[in-house]
Image (cartoon, rainbow, N blue to C red; front, side, top):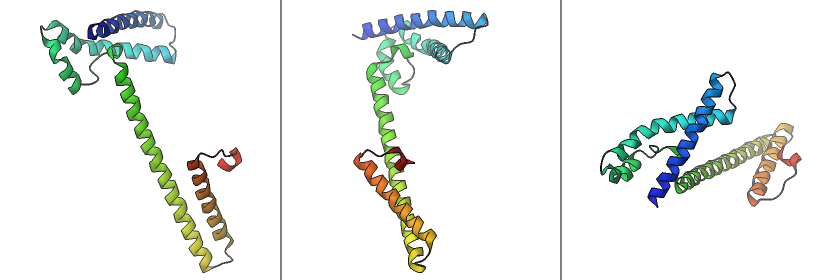
Length: 163
């Protein structure tokens, strides 16, 4: 299974090298590259530089047994065509968890800010009940808290409420 994985990775790398060679020829002839082509060219060149230390494990006898330890120490050492789909899923899960944590942080921050604004506006309103600005601020903070509650519950909201 491992051999098939590395054989497939080698074939993909060779295909990327052929494509990169064509892209370099086009660039040298004066044609501009699209964003996607430029990304592919950079990835392939990066893979070629990563191939140098990786090839040492293949050239030195019995060094392939040290490859798992080297990959533990240097996880991005392998060219991208040799990456495992499980590693990509792991990275996606980690990124998703960090995004969820950031969203939770922002939700808490917005809620605390709205509560604080409502408390300050209520205090001003108590000091001078006819203060129109304090009334508007308190209503605005209350509507913000209501909006956050509705958003957390997953209710559909019309665009005018969001704006």
